[in-house]
Image (cartoon, rainbow, N blue to C red; front, side, top):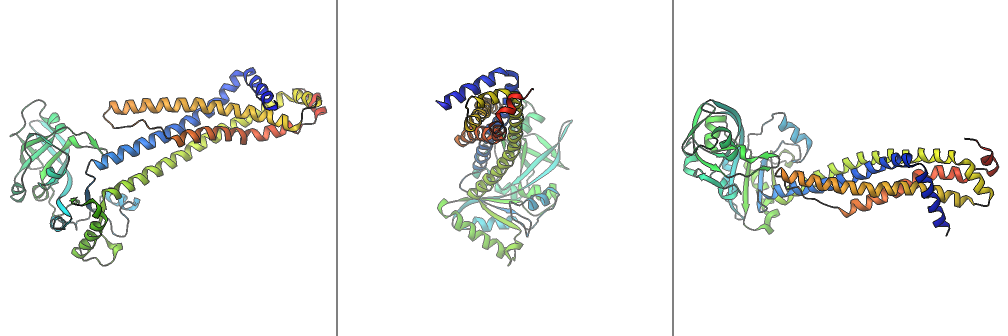
Length: 416
């Protein structure tokens, strides 16, 4: 009965000052909406990234270059590569050694570069992929027009190229492209095929790539003899970790490395790659949650300030209720319920807005070609409701205690 009475008094107090209550609730709404958005976006982004990693093939294993004395996933390693540091120790012969492993069915090596590409009067800086001929057998890309190049064309330094659908659109529009020549750097390459539209993977537009046999790109365009990574296909997925160990030992032997800290390569299974990216996305989500927590604290401070104002305004009312026999616990309960009611209402509205914005974000992303799922994490709902109630209790407690401890005589004499 006392609880119902406290709720009724809290409701009357909140509806008496509608604008003030609305502005107070707004801070909580923003914070709770942010909680839902961060969880939803984090899960959707994680799913998007992992799906794109899987598009390279869940049954693959990769050997890629790495800075010695760093871990593959470290910021130091990434920073060095972004600053232009190049590791030139990984060779195509390493790819052949990888391919000879009994649990590897096929492998290709690759290097990525850029060059000015010209056709007629049109010139653009384009990204070039130099790959082995087995690339087309292992990758999910499909040739829509013409054909892919052969291993013999790679070995003979044939000046042939297979272009992405985006490249075709930029340079040729609706023209027939197979058989035409494009100038890459100082050399003319014959277009022998067009890759079907594939879209973006890991923030790279696969339709804007030009694929060239590995050796011609190395010798004729870039002037190098190394590769950036080797991708191999596993025969038995259950032996992925054992195969990775074998390849690591083999690569150390081939590169004359005795100290594992000096490794200039990393052997990564797709499961490990997914785990690394999952950890990265989880870290980003936690960082965003920390920022959201600040927003919730600010909203809580707003609740506390408003409750102090409410206590001051209703000093005479408090004095009268205490004079009529209201206990400290009843006064405390009344003001706590007001604070909890404010934050709970804000939490519910915040959840609704958060779900709505998350849903609209998913629709917008899908309309742009992204596989962005609308994900509702039950934990985010629990945290949102729990946070709103806890904030009401914590930030409402001090004003409520102040009201409960008022001297009834002094309160009755108070003039606001």
